[in-house]
Image 1: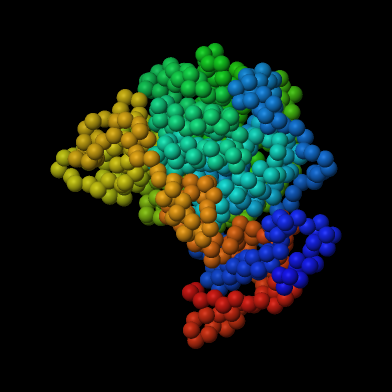
Image 2 (image 1 turned 30 degrees about the vertical axis):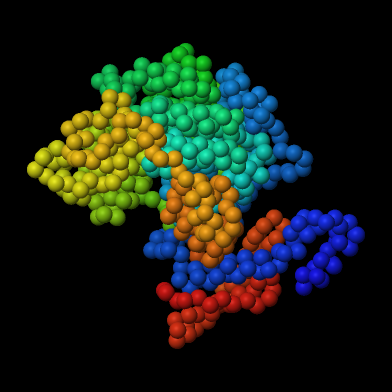
Length: 632
Ligand code: 3PY
Ligand code: ZN
């Protein structure tokens, strides 16, 4: 068959063959590869049809099966020029200054990342993101950026969705040449929950920039600028836009909360400016920056630093559209918002209605009403695929300003509390969370420090303890690992350090870091990691695959095994990925550009004595079957 394929190849027949003909015509080898890929996907579909998908087991069922409707747009010619072209023309530093001169309030759409991270534990799949990407490129070129990567998307995509995060980025990039892509980078924690060696952070940034990230929002979970240096320098070296963050906590309108004062934020902003930031982010991860605080903060920062200001908030309190408007009045340059159906609550304020709130004012964004609403309609339908992950979101009352829980954590911690049978003690969990914050010296709470505070709060409530018990020398308590990581200095240093008596009680004789953790760690051995990943994949790995492994060894290993067994399941429609097909249902699966498999599920056979069942399909019209062990 190989020779027949050679002899029937158009290039070969045209006599247009160089000695590199075989190399340049990989299609010759594709039939067995494609057949193998098809078998793997059928095995996945058979597996889910027989045994179900663990991810959705026991959860409410999504009823929607039909694709989400896309708005109409023309694909003629190139996509209209956007801010990405401006950035490419000016370079990062000049582009930063250019932003400051713009009249419209610019918007970042967070729907692709923070919105679903905050509302649905980051479960949205690549396919649902990529499907709408071109519509954005054609219809919304006025957007500042799409926040579409980083944060929790990196590990959840591999851990739960069995997708390659890098592929998400490169596939999106192909569809959107004109809008900036933005990611959230946890500085020395990269996209993880603990500090990594410097060479891992640097390699990660290089790969992310190469794969398509334009804007890196860099933050440190304790606002410790020295711990941001490696990440910021790496970003600046790639030529990408370095958006350094001040994480907002406390309340600058309350003279009694003076640890995180206006002066504290201005000093931090100046440090970040000196370190080479191109944009300054106010990262209000818990939605604590009240409208009048934003007014004061933005106004002062605009006077004190010469960087454009980008405001990120969560609408947990329900007041944060007003916060954006107050910022816009005093020269805020860019604001984050999410598409209507994924906005509000612990997510960002509503992009569609924010744009209208500014319509016909001097900060009018110029974004198109119908274009945004058409895209919002797509997102409304997509949300229906994710019913199993819908959380009970408790509206925040005023105690938000006491516990200061980040939006993403608020929903998550409630689920954890519920799983431990503590749902009815939720108010206690919130109260103890605030007490733990004070015990730890009143710190910035954002991933990963917020996780440590949350773990400690649950630990105390579950064991009927108070923060006073932690300090009681008569008690022997086994604290959560994240708490030891934080209090032992492995996440860095908070302003003023941790209270020594707390450190002593929690760490006992264990070592405490006071230096930058990255300076203490042994650099990662890339050559050794390369060998390990090579064995896992059965081929020479890409550097970014080695980086994934170094960030998340176990998660990456499980993911690689999944791919080996089932292929790339990101190509499946979301209802099929979660629930398999219904009898008689036909699905078109694009396994590569221009190569589509038509898969029709027929039926599941009776169980055999050995516990297996045969699952019957039609693949491109031909009968195919796979044998699955019935564990259901
Ligand atoms: C993250 O680190 O993922 C966050 O969204 C923090 O706010
Ligand atoms: Zn956020």
